[in-house]
Structure formats: C-alpha cells, structure tokens
Length: 366
Image (cartoon, rainbow, N blue to C red; front, side, top):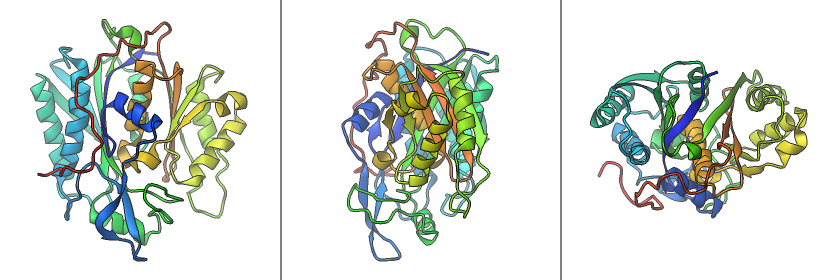
C-alpha cells in the first residue's frame, strides 16, 4: 500500500477560508447559516442557507469558480514554493446532474482549474467525477495503490441557486422548523469547495506535521433513505471496519456529515454498535459541521477531510487519528482514516498568511 500524505488542503465555505480557520470556527460555535434575503418556502416560511457569497438570481458558473478560487488559493499558499510537478492529475468532484446547475458548468470549471494549475507552472489533466458526496472516496482509495507522485482532488458544489432550493422545497427535503441558525431537521442549502493536494513523496521539512491517509473504507447501502425498510447500518459498519482495520482504539476524532438529518446519526450509532470497538468509537470526539456550513453536496467529503486535517496538523485538538465519515442519501458510504505522525509538534504546519473572515457579504460575480 502506497503511503499517501496530505501535502496541503484548502477550504472555502460560508464560514470563510482556510482549513485551520474552519477548525477553530467550528469549535467556537460560529455559523454561516443565514436567512435568504429574498426567497421563501412554499409554506411562506423563511429559507435559511449557508452562503459564501450574496445569492445570484440565475445559475452562474462564476459562483462555482469563486468557490474554487478561495480553496485553491488557501491550498497553494500552504504549498509555498513547492512545485505541483510539470504535469499533474486533478480530479474534479461535481454533483450528479440536477435542476439548477449552470449551463456548460463542467467545461467552464475544467478550464478554470487548468488556468489555476498553469499559474503554478503545471499542465493539468482534469478528470471529472460526478458521483455525489462520496465521490472522492473512491479516488482516495485508488491513490493508495497508485505510483503517481502528486494528485489534486477538488470538490465543489452549491445549493444556493434558486432552482435548486425550489427543487429541494418541492421534494420536502428543505429544512423545516428552522429559526435563525437553529434547524430542527432537513437539508440546509450550503456551498463550498475543498482542495486536497496528495503526495506519495516525502513531504519535506514539514513532514512530521502533515496528516497521512491511513485507510479508506467504501460501501453501498441498498436501502434507500425514506423507504419503509429500516437502515440498520451494515454497509457503514463494513466501511468503518475497512477504514479502522483491526482496532478503533487509536481513533479519537470523528468528523461527519450528520447535520440535521437524524437518519445519519442513527445509522452511525447502529454501525458503531456493530463494531467490536463500540466503546472506543462512541467515546470519540464528534464534529458535525453541516449545521454550521450547510450541506456541501459533492464537496462534502473533501471538505470534511480538509477540516479534520486542519485540526490534526496544527495540533489544536488532542486527536492524533481521525475518522471522516460521509453517508449519502443515494446509498454511498465512505470512511477515511487520517493520522498525524507520532511526535508531530503542534506548530510545524506553516500558517497560510491569508486574512480569514466570516463570509456572506461579498458577491461571487461582482
């Protein structure tokens, strides 16, 4: 199995920019959930969203590009003078086709990513993956058996387009019972982008502080969410077992997409109870930022990994191993096991030097 290190991460959500900043913001209780300035639900209630930028009246690829810009700039600032290599593979994780997506979205984003890579002196071979929130999981699993030196994974998605919000509302998937940042259940439309720069080389002078990809567990849940049959957690338990190996005793942090969907928390509890290390799993610190930054769709898994890596790398948390868990409504399950190398000091991860902010006031399109 190839050793894969997270050389750099970048993250942009409604909370702001920066993996380490997000770790501090989530721990501090910050939220990016706000009332939409002009949309209301079919029931005439306010719509609450987690917006990185002021909403646009029509779908536009420029919004998606702006999300990538924030995450890419954050990741590249951490790389400093480290090269991307002259030719590099970039995997772009996008949502499955759905109402509300801009025209020519895929081609626009591919060209945008290639321009960014070109600014770093690299020629990017961009591979598009449209398999939803867990799409990056299979890419990470393949990276552990590959011989390539550098790989960039980018996840980006936004539910803020009016048509997307209306579609969620008609399908009764939009959150209900929300008052301000307090949401009782349902999907909170969010948006974000995450960039993961992976390497199989020695990470360099900051190697001791760079999180390592330990294992990836993947599974597919055959029971659809909302069906009359209960989801008993077998698929997630299988993914969990593959990710933690023989014992979960060393895992002390779980970063998940639980959010305001109770079925996710219930499935996690059932999967943990099915594990031989139930006590260790249930004792882990739990971080579930979906009620802070909304549902990130195809950007979910890369964003959760960036959040976990930010906490592990700077050592703000006592955790040395983290499990990143995502459960998609379409059945995909992914568990990613990250670890901070033994003896990693708390201050070796280079600060990005970027000004961090709570987002929400600036338009993506100007």
